[in-house]
Image (cartoon, rainbow, N blue to C red; front, side, top):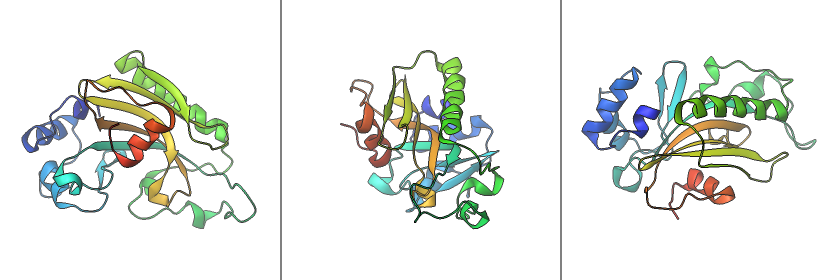
Length: 201
């Protein structure tokens, strides 16, 4: 992800950055060409992880705006109408990474926060002190986020909705977002709006 953040996102640069990661090649061999041809949300297998390119590369004239990798999911029923935690619930769509994930149905929201904190420590070791650390959303205990600048990109470690499960789960993910180096980094819910809509303020 750091390699992607430090790369140009034109076709030649992006293909070279993807190759440097050591991840498997995209269908057809070119990640940039593949993303420009896909209209939905592509999910690319990268070793033990799935790299998602929200809204597809074909959006916004084919310009890639973001990559993200989810590393934790959480589900907790809010009321009696929510589904029970059973095997059917744990079977996410085929496009989601759940086929390689391990689930603990007794996990708590506090443990979900601990998973985010572990990710925060890993990224902090690599990138140093975060520019912003805060919370957003209105879920129990709120969602956590942290932001680092990497040139004209933001590295954002955040909890939020998992759209691949139609928001049934919360997710913790590392995002690389194209973002002008001269613009103010949004905070709180505005930061989450950037992740959801990919629009700079």
